Image 1 (cartoon, rainbow, N blue to C red):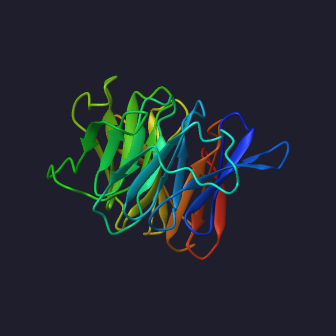
Image 2: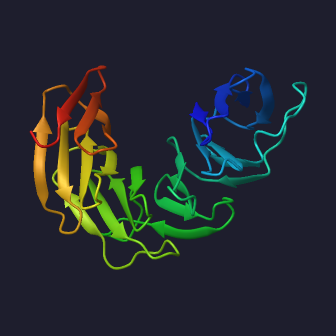
Image 3: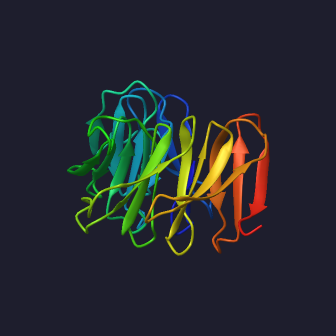
Length: 248
């Protein structure tokens, strides 16, 4: 489920490989989008609301003008699609300014905003080969990117083309898969959380670990930072959530 950036519409998965778009004021379904293949498990809407992408185990599908009204008896086929040979869920999302459509599978791919051209593919900075990308996050100005790669994460500074501006800074210390990453306000530090039950804060420039948190809540699968950067939250696979003051 995903709100459009202006808050006027809501997109959600439905049965039979459909994506429905609601008008939030009228509560009317304005469009049914046909998502051929498996049940879609992730949505991405461009910052200007002009495009919507969905993904499943086989790849991604995209629609232009997704909120354009279509009769309920019809389903609009995808305007474009891309296949990925992958056996686990593909994660997708737009960069903050909408410069790139991001696809995380065996590698992290930066595509053009229309999802047609691959601008760059990020791989394991140690081996230069495939490394399953579990999560990714940009700085608000898109000048840097952090990607979760197995038991660690890597930070790249980016050129405007999306290609790396120098070598990756690696964040190593987790003993199990990293499931969540994000920049703290100011873009100088990074939060990671993983299945080893810890959340960690790192210096984004050097890769040095600043702090580590372990509350004994089990495998941590999600994490978030408040907009003002004063609070962090982490959630485990048994449903427990911890919120903490980042300076405490």
